[in-house]
Length: 292
Length: 328
Image 1: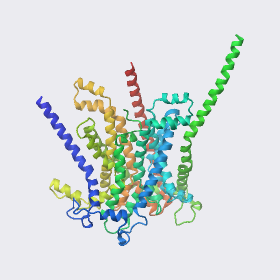
Image 2: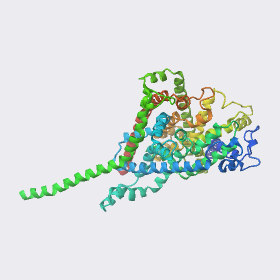
Image 3: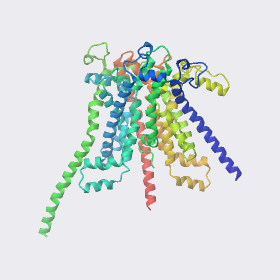
Image 4: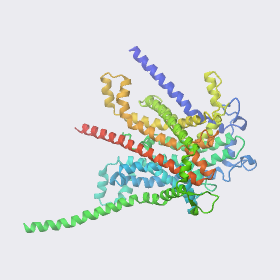
């Protein structure tokens, strides 16, 4: 008996040790980003490294987000756009494209689940939209967009994000719709509800929480997208990830504190969203491979 | 008799018409469900793909006039790309990067998932900490890495303190390890992805076969290899395939940190295509390159899809069998 409880103790210790080590590895960079955002400029790049901001300062945040000294010191006057405008752009673009993807995706998913409008093979082919690297289409996309006058417009970015996130939206909402018993719809049909009413007033409300989870899941993707935004936005509607990279390109000196303050602002919404739907994350990626 | 036949015919006729109209209505409904997808393909995806095809056969760049009057050059551009050693190296780098980071994510993700699939104190806490890296924007990962990886930076400082020896690799400026640096960042960033789907997979494995094996006196090791691993195969497969494909497309971290440098150490396929198109403005060469990469990826993806579908089918069969057993 003693050896058994001892063995259990050892295995528990090993488990906590390994998990803690990885916990530190996973968390340290995030800590470093946050702490750098509170450091005064001499501590950004110091030797030996400064682990705790001393004294913590809000200068970086004031500067980056509110543009406190942006136009006195040319060094920091980097973008024609203030981050608050980018924040607004990112919010509008990410929310609208995600909304479109979930709205149309869930209707499509309903069709797939109940009427098999796409065969299983087609459903997997739909994933190609997501699996082929976007870099292979950005050049013709930007030419096509400039011909249509959609370059550097919100609607242009929204349409592309809509297209590229649609496969995930369809797959994820389908997994929720599959769980709704068909009897409910049959009852609605007998009571004389039209097919569209059945979709919008019976099925979709039943998977409300699933739709929210899908929405937030896709919001993570659209919020942090970089490559497409880099190409098809220029100055009018740049999103936050692009704004952050501008702090890199056009300065000689290192402006870590400013970058960190901006990075924290970009990351916090994403983490909040991710933690809200943490239980649904696996479903978003599993394409029907994981059953409960 | 005759009356009977007549009345039967009468009732049959309208009902046939009704099923037909119903079928038509269903078809309309199905079509209208599909319409948005068709519209997106027709107005966004197809024009872009056709333009891409056009440019890979016509020599054009931004300095020249209207692109619609570009010269037709046949397969010249494809020949140019395929004989370009830089392109070959980019392929090699991309494959090396994708393979190593995929395996890294898988090994760590699996280890963590295996340690965590049974409930224990602090499980929720570790889960939250472990998924955080996935919830940081990739560009942010790149800049944070730059803040930590300079030669006398905190990472080297901490490692030196722990191992007691001076540890000072130049993560960001040594061309021999630059690609490994990006791969490590990729692993840090995306291990959570492998972790969550493997964890979900491990927790979803039915308990009965494991309990049966335990009763029969099988060791943990044997249970792992002979019961859990085979049941987990579809999920493992998914973790590897998706991660590999995403890693092949990795752009933000590599670009934000290195722009292909130092030298050409981190010039992966996406980076090389990007530079060709947007820095050298060889739009047509970039297009031809993109087409080759796209075809390569389509082949890889089709194989992957084939395998994924096979795994899914065997999974479906297994669950059907279990449902039947449960019924009887």
